[in-house]
Length: 82
Image 1 (cartoon, rainbow, N blue to C red):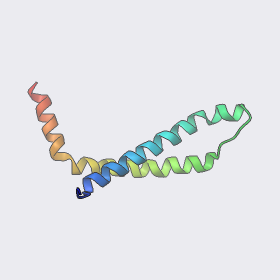
Image 2 (image 1 turned 180 degrees about the vertical axis):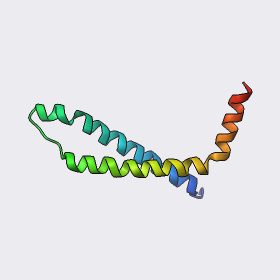
Image 3 (image 1 turned 135 degrees about the vertical axis):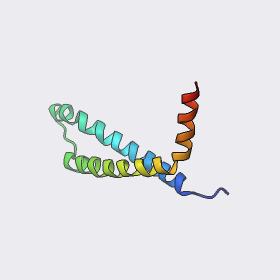
């Protein structure tokens, strides 16, 4: 069985936070339309989740970049040669 590394964990959690931020962002976008249709969404909860998960996503992005920096440098060099 393959060992779970820090890079794998950060990438997976980064994906989950990206997904949560996207879903809550869409909910925040459509909330006024849903309200005009006569329904309501728990907007204070959605707003809080969006904000806090967004902060986690932002921090994990830097950690992900730091953990993958050698690969990033290789990509940049390869692009520079073309």
